[in-house]
Amino acid sequence: MGVLNLTPDSFSDGGRIAGVEPAVHAAARMLRQGADVLDLGAQSTRPGAEEVGPERELERLLPALAAIRAAHPGARLSVDTFHAAVAEAALDAGADWINDVRGGNVTGAAVGGPAAGSLRDPAMLPLIARCGCPYVLMHSRGDSRSMDALAVYGDVVAEVHAELEAATATALAAGVRRERIVWDPGLGFAKTSEQNLALLRRLPELAAAGYPLLVGPSRKRFIGAVLDEPRPRARLWGTAAVCALAVAGGAAVLRVHDVGPIAQVTRMAAAVAGVTPVSAPQP
Ligand code: HH2
Image (cartoon, rainbow, N blue to C red; front, side):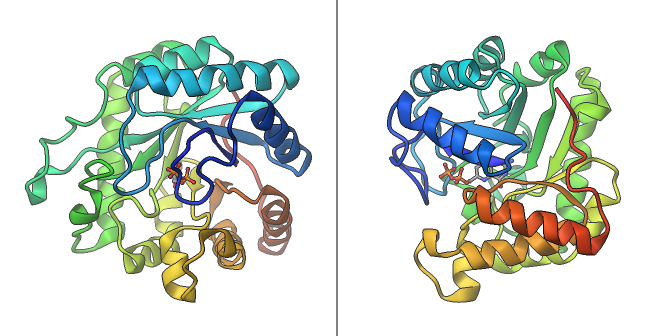
């Protein structure tokens, strides 16, 4: 999954794709380099990011989405949003998947945050149930302002697992079909570096639940912390190491900025591990 950020403030590539033409160009490049899905985002989720609201998100998203859809009718397009209004407009404009970083946001209450579930848009799950599209349900706690303070766990893997199960039960009760759900442990979302590493080390435990696993390590802070590399764009080798191990650990989809090199890493790691690289749902 190639990351296509249409934001001025994303943590590693904010402002690099300004306008429709650069977006179409970036999409073509990532597809050429081996991306199976493109993930378009118009709201940064980095810790501390300002929430721009659905109208602004749609202004950034829709022209690029329509142009990419027109240029690549057969491409699988995902939209990274936690607003149902944005998801609905995006699906109408030809998006195939919804990637919801608040999909598994069932907690926050434990350490004084908002009440359980209150950050999730209540219209999101009924929309996904209605349209039947693949749905990335990512684990997180709180929002971009509160998430760092909510990275408090006893056993991070057991708790993320339990919270994903709870969020999945809510999604199924809302009518979302089981085979449409992709799980994501949400690396960097309400997790310390050590907690991210523990989740990656014990990825097979999450994979055993039976949902295709999406993992998004690309250029993230925990890689910078391990490698003492403050420049996000210089974290490619660290990202590659994580991706190779994630494939061996059962990941089905890797969400990355550097599609060309990581597509090679993924294919090679899958060959060594003896697994099929992509088994995520088709739209
Ligand atoms: N990470 C980011 C954004 N969306 N979605 C999923 N499912 N999993 C992730 O790990 C994930 C995600 C953060 O990365 P990026 O999009 O590059 O940055 P920003 O949120 O600042 O735009």
